[in-house]
Every structure is written in structure tokens, then in C-alpha cells.
Amino acid sequence: VQLVESGGTLVQPGGSLRIACTTSGFAFRTNFMSWFRQAAGKERGFVAAINNNNGDTVYEDSVKGRFTISSDYAENTVFLQMNDLKPEDTAVYYCNVLVYGGNYWGEGTLVTVSS
Image (spheres, rainbow, N blue to C red):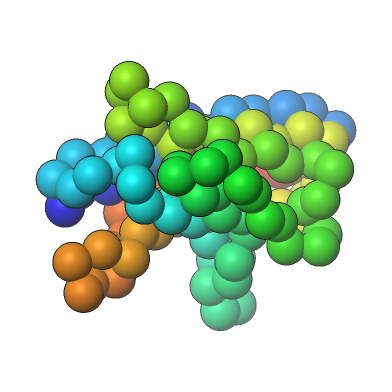
């Protein structure tokens, strides 16, 4: 199982960014995929998840209406579209999947929201 995040960068407050997680080694189409984030000095926390079986999504309250999780089944990639970014969204964003009895993480991608 491999998860590789990409797309993190510096963005101004109010801006938008899309990050991606490219996956391999498991049946992407039939699994739940999640995004978590970890700010400096804080614990890793849940951001959003998608059920790739039916497209259902769930979001942490602070990102509802601003972030959108989606999947590209042809590319086995999950995206996180982030709009109206705030300084408090600054964090390393991690992709996650629970599969084959294991809990798998990528290396993360850093998103910095600052003027």
C-alpha cells in the first residue's frame, strides 16, 4: 500500500488550493479514503473522508462548506479542494486508508496559509 500526497504550498488567506493523494497497492474503488492534518505542536486531526463505494462524504465542522473531498477512480487518486483558506488551516495534510488490517499514511504535504 502506497499513499503519496502532493500539491501543498504557500497560499494567501482567502485563497484556494487542491491537494492530491495518489494511491496504489489496494482496491481504491472499494475503500474509504480520509484526509487528516497536523499543525505544529498539535495532534493530528480528522479533516474529511469519502466512501468510494457510493461517494458519500463527511467533514470536520471547521471545514464544512469550504473543503471538498473527491476521488478519481481512473487515477486511484483522492483530492482535497480547499477554498477560503484561513491561517488556522496551516498544517501538514496526510492521506489515510484502513485496509488489509492496517492503518496506512502518506508522508504528508505542507499547506501554509499566510500573507
